[in-house]
Image 1 (cartoon, helix red, strand yellow):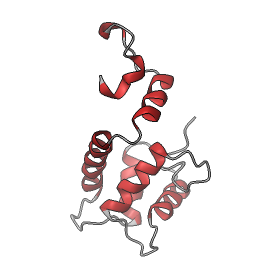
Image 2 (cartoon, helix red, strand yellow):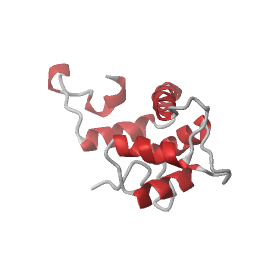
Image 3 (cartoon, helix red, strand yellow):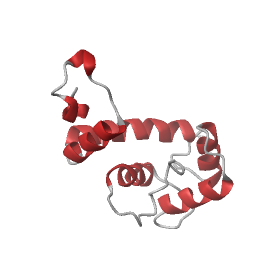
Image 4 (cartoon, one colour):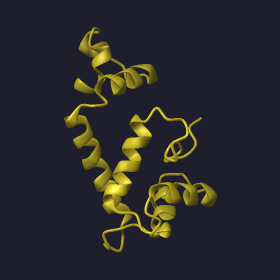
Length: 123
């Protein structure tokens, strides 16, 4: 399993994806172009599922509805997440902005990044 390389020493039938294995694997693979492309593809699919009107961009209602559908329903949170993704302050989220925010959420070590809580407060 390429994306859990830190567990490679375990027999394949004993490999378990734990939090520590995932974190270590992401650290090892954060610059892997194949991993980033796989993440981009998955996020692009999510973007287009949220773009129910097929406009090619997301507005705040799209983000609120999409996040609500995955269980993040706090309107103050979704407003902050939208504002973090809307880096050019046009009130629209492009596919690239959406993907870049997610990549920052996954790979950034900057605790002050506006994308730190992109997918909801982690507990």
